[in-house]
Image (cartoon, rainbow, N blue to C red; front, top):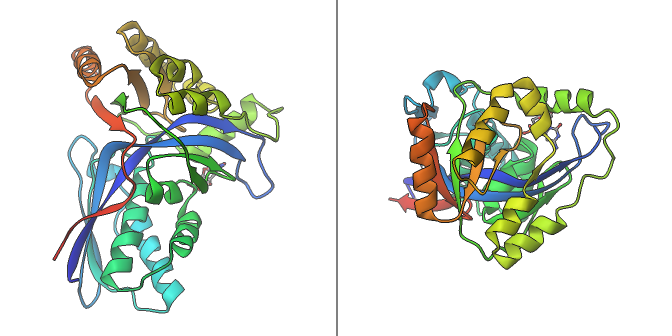
Length: 302
Ligand code: C5P
């Protein structure tokens, strides 16, 4: 293949149980990821050298995306090339559509898509286990971006197992104009909860709700241990959640480490109505997305 495009989804965390800081600087997690229908596309083309370009819509802002040379896609390519002892060559382009620095794992999606695209471009046939292991080296959320769907994440989030999900869930997604740093939110969590248990809160109620396809049970069971820390750093997120719930969301919650907030809705129409209400209330970017959707997958090749 001379050119191919791989599409990777954003994620939200339906459950994010966080335990006390480990010695390696990470926190043990019990999380339930869901891939939602907001995507970045990564195109890889055969070339003599290495180049990385990107198209970033104005509502994301080019400044929010790490430039070529410092992007996680450069690292993904290095890692894959080193694993197989091949040269890192190719012209790679990222078309962004996932909100950045927002708790939706946009960078992780790009890394996952790049691994799949370059594996194909270079004809490497990397095994699934190796691809997942390389993904885990790039970031805790990257293996999930390969797998997609709805999955339980343990360890530091990198160990993913698909779970039973009977629903088609509708979400309204409200990104923030200014990002929040994930390490900063985790540090703030450590300060606020010095007695956090070593075992994170389990996800049993939530797993039951999605296995039953029960939206109200899911609304009740949504859980994020980082939410208090994110809201303490950004009090306006608490107000946004109140506003979305006041406007009819079944439940609003901070996504991952924030600042993006997501609102569970009962149907596609409900999500479109709530999105219009929040948009009319002055939020510059309001998106509607369904989940679960597929992980990183090939969408075109030549
Ligand atoms: O794994 P990743 O590079 O995406 O993590 C970014 C940062 O988020 C880590 O350096 C760490 O500060 C924090 N983190 C954490 N515990 C996790 C995942 C991430 O403390 N399970």
